[in-house]
Length: 525
Image 1: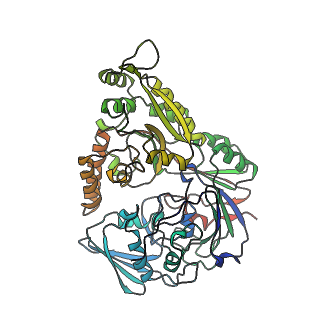
Image 2 (image 1 turned 135 degrees about the vertical axis):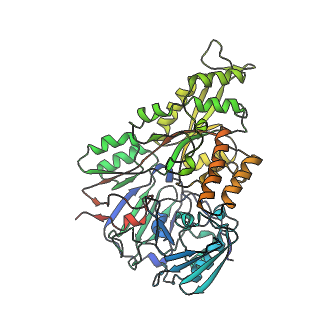
Image 3 (image 1 turned 180 degrees about the vertical axis):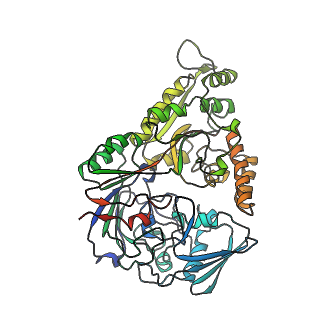
């Protein structure tokens, strides 16, 4: 096994990729703004990073791709077979693929890559793979320690982009920071953490998936991905030409953008939830009645109508509604009930006095409410603050950048927070509620024996898809019964671009805006 990599945080420093990019030929240039939920990436190492952005999907290809209808499509793997008992998978690989440094992609590349996940936060993606056998140069076999019904989903993840073994070994901790080598349609040219990522075209690219019409090199020669924390600024730059394409357009801006003659808008189905985690270790939220009351205070329907102009949908549990594991006992779904919320706080001893804030034993019901910068999150947090005030809870808002707020979580300095996730699989429950990940990403700080048992059963003991759905549904229902968070909103994915500058395929293929779409984009002549 090659050494496990731990990425270094080199904030604020522009780092130029390896010298083999210095003579890259670029032609058409495009500037893209990352969405708010992709800000703050500190590395393009897909093995060790827990925060990757859209640029990563252009640097690395995956064995499998997933379309918007949840179907799986060949990419670096041309086909695959699962044994009847689920204890092995055989993948047949595409011939003629090379990494950015010229080294070949083959079965040994896969065998070198899978063991690197050990002892990383992403180890769960391949935890069921006991060993990898090279059958021949273009055939590889995964021998499983247990059946893994989610293997294809995992392989289609951005975190399972395949890195070049030689560069991965030689660059050590710098891999993904000062350079990154994959087989993708673009190469990393430069990476200024917190500012921008510059990619240049891989002119040798000729192995796209069938999600792209263009099977060769990209039409665009250079892409600059910018981090623009303030969404209003990004919106204005799109209108004035500083940005060509804006990922993650805030819903309140949609109608304004649609009125612009040179701006086109594409809406994709959402793959995540905006929600409010509750820190169960911080009083008064160590009392389950207070947690339940907090959830009942939030009026999801009113938020969708007032902030999002009816675009998207209210969220009533932790999973996007298209997943079967979201179909829980209706009694466990979280919905607005102001009277019951007030009753629960009364029962918990938090009483209204003459003022607007409840108190207990002389202590006011005043709590910290964190959020990350960006107009959509701050607007949503202000509405949440007002709705909590209706039950006599004073919520004091603090706004952080995306990196700093993670440090606050890890150091257990939070109580409530408004945040979102983007993941269209039920194993997101493991990510945010496993006791093995306290602080971040388990922002609720929840550690519970029964919860961990249900988590482990769902993650490890499912032998087929039906069992996996049943196990995750049971785990989801138990999480809901503990009132660890407040579901708020299911957003759509909104993309806006300058139609005078760009041609973008619509509909977008895939569950996210990734390389298959960028390959078909072109600058308007």
